[in-house]
Length: 271
Image 1 (cartoon, rainbow, N blue to C red):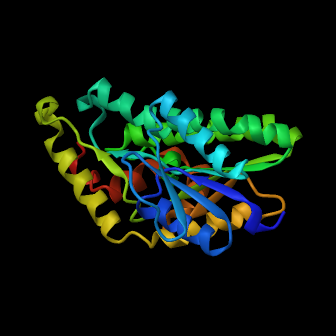
Image 2 (cartoon, rainbow, N blue to C red):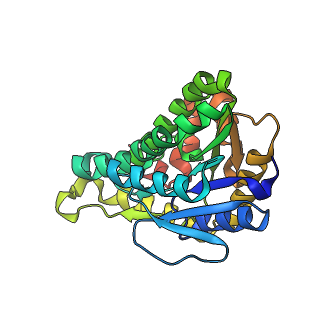
């Protein structure tokens, strides 16, 4: 099928990786539907729709509207997400649930709405945007990393289950990029004094990483390549941190622990 005839749905398309991906697909000739939580007009060849991935009714209405307008969804890019920076013990369960409800269950909801049509047609591409942070239990990102780890494992299982139906499922894992993710703000009321030094070191490290983050268009180019690939792989790492999975698998745990703690300025806080 020519790309001009293909329909792509990209969640979280208002900024960062989502917006860059929408532009890339539109320029390549796809019909592109992008989503945002707040209503907004179409932009640069992208038909924008309202979608809150945390609400099943919103997901069903959005997918139904795409199917009514275009008749099919050939490529789904699950990009909508939130970022959380906070010490695990200090994080209220409500905040942790918000992260999982968006980053993991949000993707699951959209896939559940889109997959029946792909399965019936015996074709389709599902591309989930994960994170290289899922490979590392980075201090200060426990629930964000855990949600992306859950998404990665789910993606791998789903990939096997739908393979007989001609549906390909892949995971694109960016490192530090200017993603534009909404941040779940940590509760100051829950702050524990013992963590003051750790919290400060973590925030300084993450701010540096974001300041030096890459152009989201690098990720968008990879997503488009996955959509076009004849036999897409399961995982695609993008960014300076793409070596993290190899270090995780090859280094002894003690050495890897040191690298993480040193990178986050925690080694000088140890006993």
